[in-house]
Length: 390
Picture: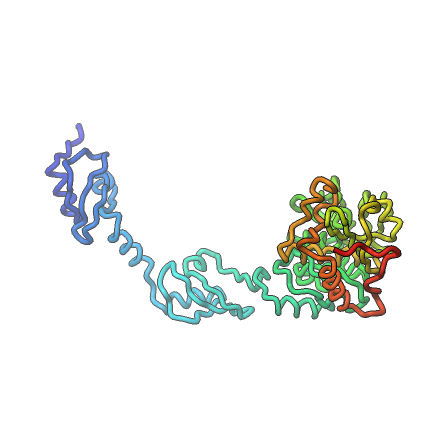
């Protein structure tokens, strides 16, 4: 038997029974039909087949929102019970579905704004417990409990190297906060940060370990500590492909081939130096083992050695040099534009003397080195031939 044809009168009656008045002639069962809701006055365009045959509503505006709100509406007691079961203590009355709710984490005491729907759907984790949101004071206390004394302010992210002095052996390093928080004391000099053979760290811990030992990863963590990891040497800025394995780096057996050819060993005594170029009015910094290695690297000629600081290991000198770069860029000083084509290899480790006078740079490094014991580092060693002051 053929289906009964729906007339316009039948369609109008069906919509009126469902609380909507049609505004246009009936277009058919499969076409959208403009109508006005008799409850809220809103205009919608539902299909006859969706409303009558599938049980849909005639209003997609305020009435639909009120219907959803009635479905999600819960009292404070019920909502608070859900939050408490997931480890959150509400600090205010339930604000309603989908709205931020100020709560306190029952584990670490951090105050966060959570939404009930997120907590019910399994997103109840606390960023404070996970270590993602850490204030500077808490981070410094964590470092000090691990026997590390930060020399500068908290860099703001867990995987950023943080210049700190080891409280056990006195050496300076760059242990990221994430590595210290996950594994405790981190110091290559006293071998307290070795990676256990059975341990497989997550990517954040792996990146932090590489940075702490002077290698900057260029790709994602390969997933295994014995797999070569493409990275960049932080001392000579050379790309290592294939790079060292995480296990070799943490056991201090990884070496940069470029540094080996230049006779730069992280364990041998080294110096942090400042050079000036009188014609280009540029200042640059770097590390070396001696003045002879400076000349072998092509730093002689128009470059003049202005100041240098001696360290018991080149790794320590690099740690201070890295902090110099962070400070210079943090002050808003870009690399020296005159060196971009004249000396592109060392362009990133430079600044214009018009932006950063040599006296200011020397004073800042002196203040940083002053934080160390005077018998461990000799500060502000004058070169044989005085540098050119700006």
